Image 1: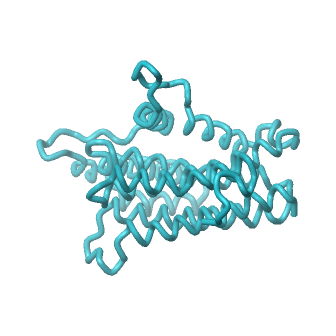
Image 2 (image 1 turned 120 degrees about the vertical axis):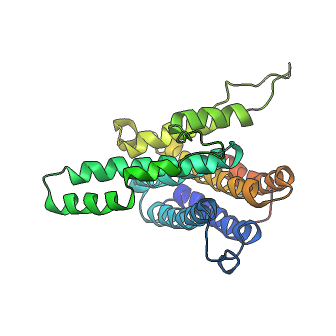
Length: 265
């Protein structure tokens, strides 16, 4: 156990606690959903559960061994990606339908590749999946006017869109596009998940440890913001309130346990 790893793990404990707290506030109980569950309801809950498991897994890794910093970053990447996809969907016209179409297309492509595999096990899996995602299912991906719905864009385009929406304004009132916060952390997390040599050699452990903690404390409020835009009647105020609760966590990661606040979350 390392001092720095334990410090980041304590911040992640509080990050997970906030995810649970705000999930109760902004995600209606499962019993209120009824028989028919919308795609957005379903995937927001899946993302919440996956986020909690991700943060707990990162904590186990960071508390066990310094060499697990790269693994913690790699574990974070899928949850980070899912969070930004859901935020994009919650603010984009037809965003949830487009995201659902994107996932259906990805499943179909993957299933086709499995079906064509020489492995009998993969081939059977692919054939089973394709039965659920037949080509004629594409017919339902149309808007009210009958126009075909486009699938959600690739993650790079989604990140660019979020940066443009959330970028702070400069002194002239224009968007400061130079501060690519979401993309910058995503690219760094990707380097760890792709096992690039510079995170593996350990020279930048402190930086990657910070990225792991900060990335998780960014992914969680982004996910909560997606839920707020979907459910809340006053999303701007609620999103601002949620982000405000995470600022002390980010300060603790950057400057130490007592930075910005003397109380725990």
